[in-house]
Image 1 (tube, rainbow, N blue to C red):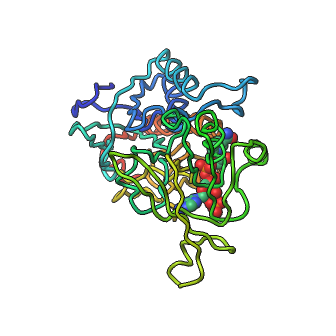
Image 2: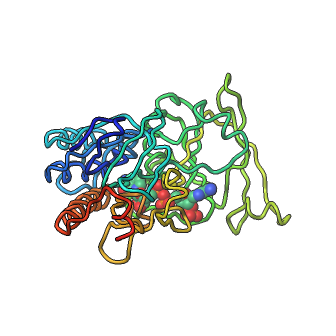
Length: 347
Ligand code: NAP
């Protein structure tokens, strides 16, 4: 029997942590399997797609689809089959007892037989001086959220991947000039995105260059930056060895980071779930979403250091729900409960 959020007496069959495309896809599948999943939406409900503009490579949308729209429709679809959504954020998990316990930031504790981790990844920071102070005051990790504040500004976009190209292209709607600052002399972005950015006359590139310091204040916003460059790239690494690195001050009104993402796995610290060197959740070898802890499944960007596409996240979300359903069924068929400490020793 499933219980309501925060009820420690009852035990859920499946809790899905994360409400991006992977979590939603898992919710649709788990709900259609009558597992009455609870989706904990987390601190960034809807995940990375809510911060993007059009998604052009999601199968079935030849004209593209808005990231926010895709997420809203996915949530409606999951709710239609009975998935429940809650604003909860998991702070800590206890996975060495069954059922598993999830401690939420509200103080509530949830208990569940199976757990699907679909917590995605959050924007990476570069570590420039004054970054913490100016985040949200002219420094941003989301052009679609904050671009409109920079009408008529000169802005910098940091990074050389698809995210940076997308941010730069979006910012051309508002900014007078957009300069992409990349630490090497070659983009990582896909050919189509790189071409679009190169062909746009409002976008310039600074190669072999990094952001060292951000100038400004919370009152005045971002007013400029110190850039460092070196002909061999990765200039900040060369600062320490005293190699010849050029410094330059530039006046800009906004800075946008597009330097990738880090997986959200902090809440799994001190559990037996294994992480890789970049803190992605490690699933078992083969085509599976199982983790080192039986009954815990991983889906989407949190477990994917390689593909990180909306469509692959949706795919692994459905796989995680199918794997969770099969795991619960197997245990029921064995007569083993997913609710006891002995059950854990059996695994
Ligand atoms: P990414 O491909 O990992 O690119 C990150 C970029 O930031 C790289 O160019 C990297 O430089 C640079 N970088 C990383 N850390 C840095 C630091 N500390 N200082 C300066 N630069 C740093 O990440 P992404 O662009 O977010 O893309 C992630 C995935 O999502 C990709 O698979 C991408 O195709 C997909 N995506 C697709 C679209 C689209 O199709 N419209 C849009 C967004 C994202 P190096 O190149 O030197 O490593």
